[in-house]
Image 1 (cartoon, rainbow, N blue to C red):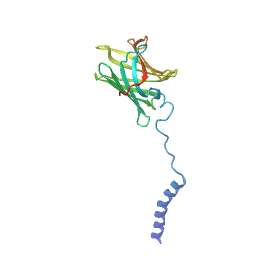
Image 2: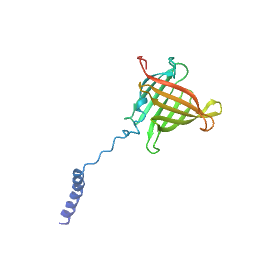
Image 3: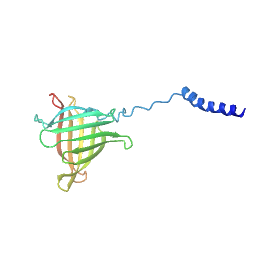
Image 4: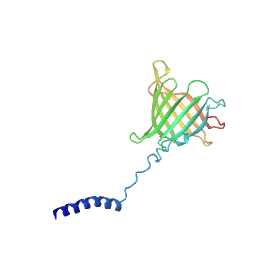
Length: 181
């Protein structure tokens, strides 16, 4: 009798969790990177020809692609002259801000942080030796989408810890028209 009682308990222990699970299906996790915050930089994704603002002389191409289910944006910057570079950008949930890591052909790495301000993506980081050897500067990049679909990347630098800013570059990204990658 005692063995039957233990067997019945063992069978009940095996069946009960399965029955409870069958009655209450698990809730699937929400998609990882589908929030408005994660999509805030999608306007930059594309194949681009890059020009100084106000000029028709192309200085670079840039491939910007969403990766890993939309959780990251990868940039590949190819200037017409000089070395290239690239970046990974993500929305960091814990910090509630966008983060970008830039690396270029000189071996420089710059970490930027920021987010959307007045409908524009604004990222700021300390760039070592950008002004000259031993002369670092804050770099602030503001990305904005124009009505024609182009994207402006306005770069400013500050050598006084953000008290004053001067334009260091000003690019217009236009949708690529050639088959070049």
